[in-house]
Length: 238
Image (cartoon, rainbow, N blue to C red):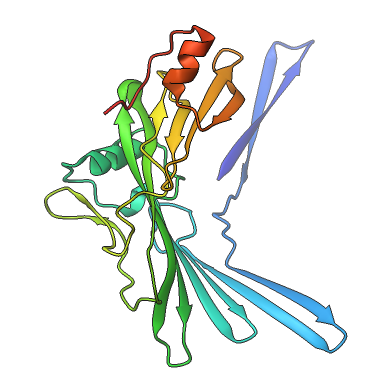
């Protein structure tokens, strides 16, 4: 409950009165949304059910959509969805640091599944982020992988931290990252990234490192640093 206080004072009498009121507060969650599109020849109804599978947080873990009889499930995992009691690898250590620093909203993995008429679930899309902790408690995405699926997969395994403390993810994720390795400056700003096709992109930050002021494609940050005759220290060189 939220308690509010009101202070009343009598200017002529040296006395005061404090009254308080309790306002009941509830943990309100969105659980269902229905959208209808009316056409000349009928109506298309789309419904979305929102599921909160982890009582430790209020983020949506599953969205189940029904569009003209086809069911699609979007699953998400957040830092609190991983058991970080035992961590060893770089990614697992970063997840533990995210929780310790109360950075709980980033989506670590997202999968899209389609449900067939027989009820079987088929994995059709997915991406997973491998984080790394840099100096100064800067926790950033070092690599982003996407699923490589020639055909939908019945293996709907999601990422986890195994008993040895290592971050494990689906074997069908493309070993060549979609993005990464990324580089960051000492304030945690992204300054360089490389796509899976090899395209390198650099970012220049200004206004006391608060906002990006330039994006340069096909040039590394080191080359730009030389052109600008600036001295920017890099994170994530390894």
